[in-house]
Image 1: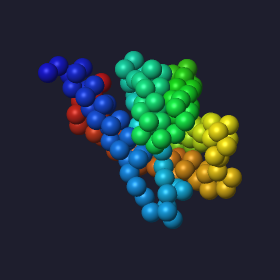
Image 2: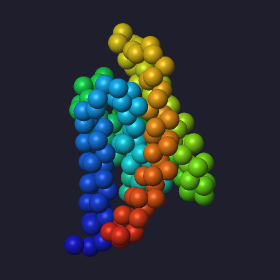
Image 3: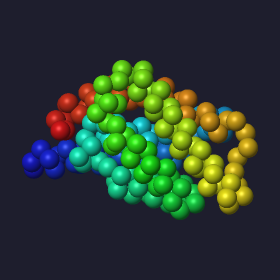
Image 4: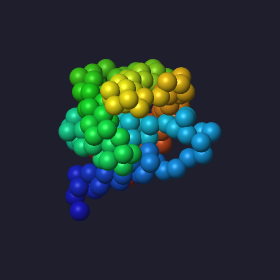
Length: 161
């Protein structure tokens, strides 16, 4: 198996694991703070392998997430596609940011994702009105500080380029 195919499988496995983590059940007390694992992994691959992971991959992952969560079809797909576009337009600059600045940027991207979700749910009359809906933006931004070095280490370990 050549390294390109090997690298592609590693990317697919990480996205699949992120999808599983996105739908795994949590206790009601901590479910409000669930970080967006799929967004974290997609942002990482958009920054590190922009020629392999792009808007179409993110849109497909969003559709899968919509189906798995039973959400309005297209709400996650739209949000992730816009996030992918924002990153693809400026990935060279974002790569140069410190990990703290990247975490702040991931926080803003997750906040955008939450706002799109709330907008789509509001249209359907099922939106949450509690401020806890914004808690995942904080946990996702903070988790970036752990996810980025760990996935970068695994990327080097499995020689994914």
